[in-house]
Length: 222
Image (cartoon, rainbow, N blue to C red; front, side, top):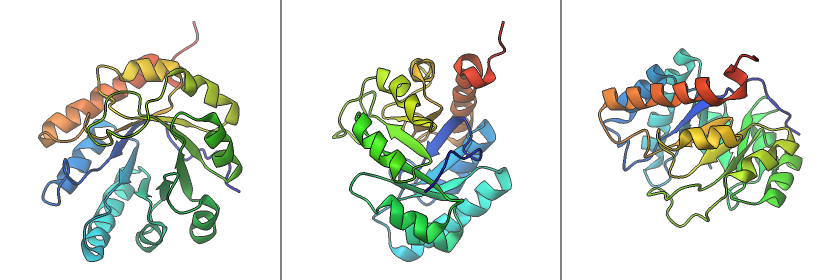
């Protein structure tokens, strides 16, 4: 089973989306997010041809390796293995964590979506998840059908001794609330991508400033 990994950083978790990071801007957009301080990246693309997805994932893996940020692949264990990604993120209807662990090894990062359900979080922990993802917390254009989550679940989830990720409609205006509630990672799509690389970089910097101001890891005891 997986255990808590020191390789999972605290901060902005940038997630790609083909509508906001199309092939012609994907690399420049992610590069800008990394320059701005994104600490982890997830490649999420399920509809493109396999050859395209493989090429994009390889490019992102090279980019993230240079930046020292883990790259995770959304729901494609085989693709993660082929490109040497740090791990995968799995939804409740995706591949099993046990299968992913068997294929990717003990050092892989496996994140699991838990919506707004501590029972799912408990099961994910038992299955070897390295981090637990909750949300959506705000209206999300990326996943408008996702069930709503309450911010207090982030603190409750600390009992599982896993880094806690918040996702869903997160912006630089509302991110601080979730960090204060217990989020170790803010998984952001539309609140980060969709504009120019310069805008993406500035948003990433702002998110990282929120962590510096509100997350216990960065706060000096008085």
